[in-house]
Image 1 (cartoon, rainbow, N blue to C red):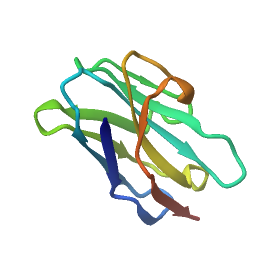
Image 2: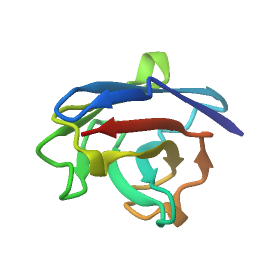
Image 3: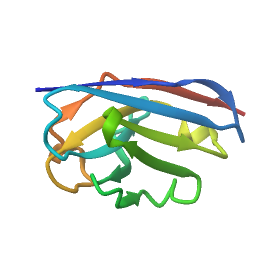
Image 4: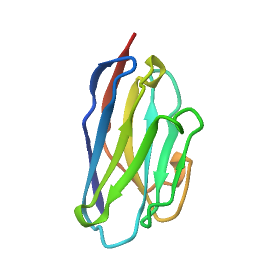
Length: 121
């Protein structure tokens, strides 16, 4: 069992930056692929970014030029650096872990509770 806890969300203005963190605990012996997803009110949870143990990354087109996912395997942490934030980035952001590379939520096995990011205009 793996527990994931997100942090770093908050209220910011358009154009600002935030860094989200995800701390993993429990059974972290596997080389999990980590992902960030987000869900806005009334919308489906959508893929944001993913990173393998070896730091191979993939991004949704909507965030590719603005967000950076990274990880520190020794600390069991993954990060999402968010720059040039837009109002449409407002959502609850979730950290997730999978046993293989994936960009769809259904293929991730473990999820955090989420952290709210609100971007005002």
